Amino acid sequence: MRAFPAGVGIVIDPASGAPNGLIAAYIAQSEPDGALANGYRVSQGREMGHDDAFAVRIDGDGMVWVGGRTQTVVDGNTHWLELNNG
Image 1 (cartoon, rainbow, N blue to C red):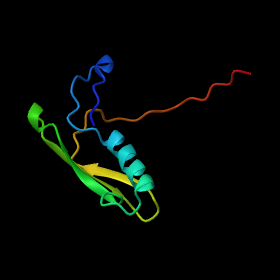
Image 2: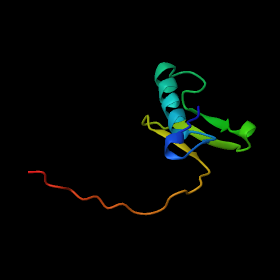
Image 3: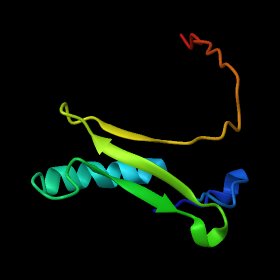
Image 4: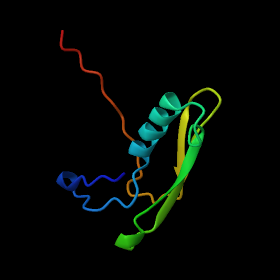
């Protein structure tokens, strides 16, 4: 599972955690006793020269967790203003 959001300047995404999280949730619901129902490990991007690996797991409360190494691209804070259109 990979994404290529070139419209926002990202032309390569060696591994996509969000889609894998959705797949894990689907597997857990459709095959609750299956071998992958509690999660799995993902390895992607090797052929592109960007080998990446992460784990996808589902805890006892049904929450999906995706984790692995990360690279910070943007760091900062956002302050939201609430506008009154009345």
